[in-house]
Image 1 (tube, rainbow, N blue to C red):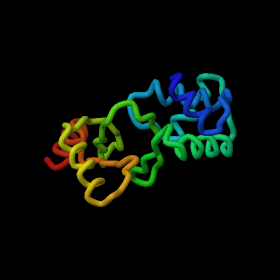
Image 2 (cartoon, rainbow, N blue to C red):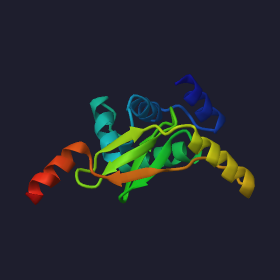
Image 3 (cartoon, rainbow, N blue to C red):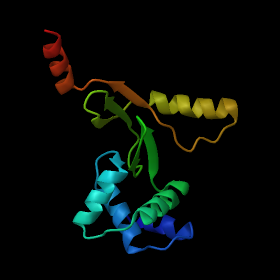
Image 4 (cartoon, rainbow, N blue to C red):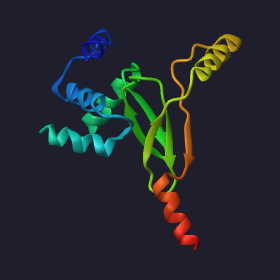
Length: 143
């Protein structure tokens, strides 16, 4: 957390109560969190920023790569880049879970950057399909 706070200060930002709470909620979350879920978790912490404050804070945090924004099926999700992972997205129930892929993808990313003389800051890779629960439901529906 201290590293994140230091990055915020270096980026010219203040450590407001709302900004700290957003970082805290995202760092305690296992994976992607929608703006709606983020606001719900902030309310539990008795922090109720208005919509413009949330947009401004999320824009600041994503601009300086303190948090990552992924848009999946038209919904923006946020997370703190803690470990390198990708996502499995269920097309039926919209559940999202993280999955780790071996180091070969990281090697390919470095090779792509080098070949194209391109500084890659981040990338997004999602796998779309059906989770175990939804697969069972779909099979039952077909019978």
